[in-house]
Image 1: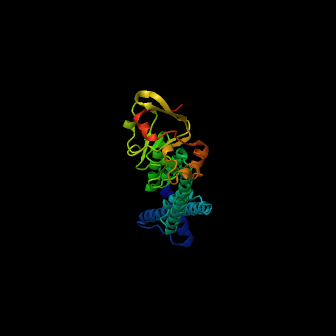
Image 2 (image 1 turned 60 degrees about the horizontal axis):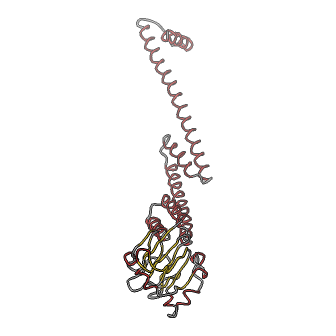
Image 3 (image 1 turned 180 degrees about the vertical axis):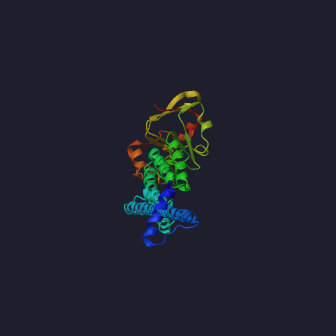
Amino acid sequence: MRYVLLFFTLFFFSKLFGQFNIGAGGAYQVVNAVSTLGREVVRAVEYKKEKQEIEQREAEYNNLVQQGNQLFDQGRYREALEVYNQCLSYKQEQYVRDQMARCNAELARIEREEYQLLIDKADSLYNQLNYTEAIAVYTEALAKKDVQYPKDKIKEATADQERWQKVHFSGLLISDARQDDVSSGAFSKDPYSDFIKPGKYNFISNSLIYSSYQSLDGIAVPENMRLVVYSEPNFKGTKLLDITGPAIINNGSKKNTPGAMEIQSHEFTPPLQSHFPQSVRTWSSNDMKSWVNGSMEITKP
């Protein structure tokens, strides 16, 4: 049927232009002519369809590029990256790859800024002795940027938090800062300090290593923790101390040594001042050096 239709089409044009003449073998020529014309028509149709598809893809590509650029201008870089990625499935164009590089650079800048803001916040919480929140924010910063600093600070904050769940014993007077051969900073680790968790201790001397190496001179008890010291092992003898924190007890026998009164009376560096104001700092009634020969109980409600 297709060839018949093409035959009459060819016949019509041949008559029109006076070029159609069926003679010997004419039918064969007509069939060839019709076949050739058919192929040309098919090619024309396919070309037109292909051209339309190319134009449609070009329009879709340009629309995606425009969407990506709008998202980029709005600072929505992750969304822009997704759209630019779609663009590459249409055309590998340098402009799109350049825009993707700009998106990645902006995202890196934002992450650096967000990371630093989180670190600043975590450092502030840490300095305020708010270790639980500091650890949470350091962990959040670590998710932004996998570097060593927040890892180290999480480790430090965890150790500090654990120390504040214990009683601090020192071979020096306890103050807000370390002074060589004079004082230990409250709940700061140094070669003169032991940190003892709640429990019953029949022999104090068996539990203290650094603080009783020469002399027990300072004790810091955190808030809501109770310390009872007995003069003899196994919780016998006189109660030398029964106190619930917050409290700092320094050795009364050191009261007249240089700087001792200042340690007891000066305003501590924040935030330790709020934990241990002057009203909770006391002197022992006797030489604390002998206390290590007794026993003690540390309890927490």
